[in-house]
Length: 493
Ligand SMILES: NC(=O)c1ccc[n+]([C@@H]2O[C@H](COP(=O)([O-])OP(=O)(O)OC[C@H]3O[C@@H](n4cnc5c(N)ncnc54)[C@H](O)[C@@H]3O)[C@@H](O)[C@H]2O)c1
Ligand SMILES: O=CCC[C@H](NC(=O)CCC(=O)O)C(=O)O
Image 1 (spheres, rainbow, N blue to C red):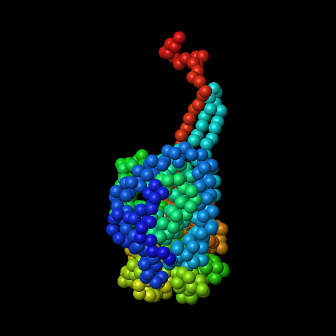
Image 2 (image 1 turned 180 degrees about the vertical axis):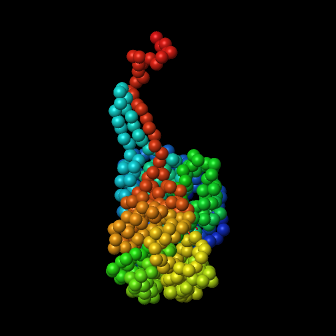
Image 3 (image 1 turned 90 degrees about the vertical axis):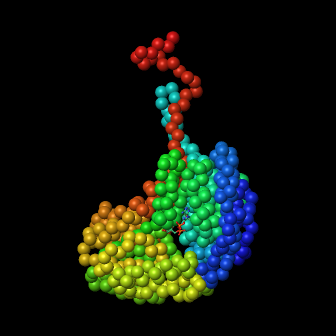
C-alpha cells in the first residue's frame, strides 16, 4: 500500500498537497500508517468551490448521453481495478476482503440504478394543451458539497456523487478523515474515466476542513452521510438558508423484534447478520433486539449466544475469511467497551462480553447484553457489535418500546405470522421495515432514508435523484397569440 504525501487534494483535476496540518490514516488491523498527508486549507476549499462553479454550466449543458458515458467509464474502471480497490478499502477500514469486494460491487451497480432513477423521477414530460405545450423538466442545483462517512467510504459518498453529477451538478467532496486513501483512489478512477476538470473536486481533512466547506457561501447544497450529531450541527448551520438543498443521511438506534419463529437457526442467522455485520458499523445495524419471554425465545437466545461466541473475528486478509474484521480504530473499539461498561453499571447483564482483542488495533469480539430490567437506557447509537436484548411478554409493549427512540432508520420483525407482521408494519416508525430478513443490506434500487433523528426526509439511494435537481414547469408556444375574447376590462386594439 502506497503512502501518499503529495497527491491528496484534487482541484480542477490537478493533484495538490494539502496546505493545512498533517494527518494520517491507520490500518486498524495492525496499527500501521497507510496514508499521510496534510489537510486542505480554507483557501484550498475556496479554490475547490470556485473550480466546481467554473465547470458547472458546461457540465450541465453537456448532453445527458455525455454524462452517462463518463459514469459508464467509471464503472469500467471500478471493474478493471476492483481487486486493488477492495484491498484498499479492507486495509483502511478493517473490513474483511470479501465484504470490501461487495462494496466495490455496490459502487459499480449504483450507476445503472441512478440512471433509471434519474429518468423515472426527474426526467422530462410533455403534455399538449390548447395552443401550447406543457413541459416538466428538472435542472441541477449547481455546486454541491458532499460529505462521506468512514464505514462505507466508497459506496456511500458514491451514492451522492453519481446522481449529483448525472443531474448536471458539480461537486466538492469531503471524505471522512479516517478513510482518505479510499477517497483518493476513488478520484483516481474518476480521472481515468475521463472526468472533465472541476466536476468532482476532493478536499481532504478533518472537522476544520469540513466546517470550511459546509459554511462556504457559494455552494448550492450539501449532501451528508454521517452521524446524527454532525447532521444536526449542519442542519442548524443551514437554518436560514432554505434556498440551499440539504440532504442528511444519519444514524439509527434500530430495533429488531423476534416473535414465534420455529426455525431457531434461521432466526439466529438474521439477528447476527443484523447486529454484527461490518463489526456493527452499519447505520442499519440492529442495536436493540426484543425476544419474547417464551421457550421459543429462550431457545433463540441460547443459540444466539452460542453462535455469537463462535463468530470468526480476524484480519481482513486472513485465508480463512472472518465474518468480522477490525473496527475502524482502536478509539472506536475502546468506545464500545466503555458503552458496554456504562450499561453494566446501570444494572444490565452481560450474556456475551464485548472485548477489545488486541492493543493498538480495532479488533473487538461481538457482545450481547440484557437490558430488560434497566431503566433509562440512553437513546443513542452504539456504533459497534453490541446487541442490547430486551425480553418481553406483550407484543404491543415491545413495539411501543421499539418506537421509544428519537431515531427511525431501520426496523424488523422475525415471526412466522403474517398477521403479526401486518400489525407491526402499521405501528413501527422507520424508513426501512423488513420481515424475516436482516435489517442490514438495503437495496440501492429502493429509497434509503430514515425519519426522526435519522434524516431530514431526503431519502437517498433510489430517491437520491429527488434532491439532485429541482423541477421546472413550462408552458410553451411558438409565438404570442392575442385571444379572441379578452378578459373583462381589457381593451387591446
Ligand atoms: N443513513 C445513512 O445512510 C448512513 C450511512 C452510513 C453511516 N451513517 C452514520 O454515520 C456515522 C458513522 O460515520 P462517521 O463517524 O464518519 O460520521 P461523522 O458524522 O463523524 O462524519 C461524517 C462526515 O462529516 C464530517 N464532519 C464531522 N464533523 C463535522 C462538522 N462539525 N462540520 C462539518 N463536517 C463534519 C466528517 O469529517 C465526515 O466527512 C454513524 O452514525 C452511522 O449511523 C449513516
Ligand atoms: O451504513 C449504512 C447502511 C449501509 C447499507 N445501506 C445501503 O447500502 C443503502 C443502499 C444505498 O445507499 O445504495 C445497509 O443497509 O447495510
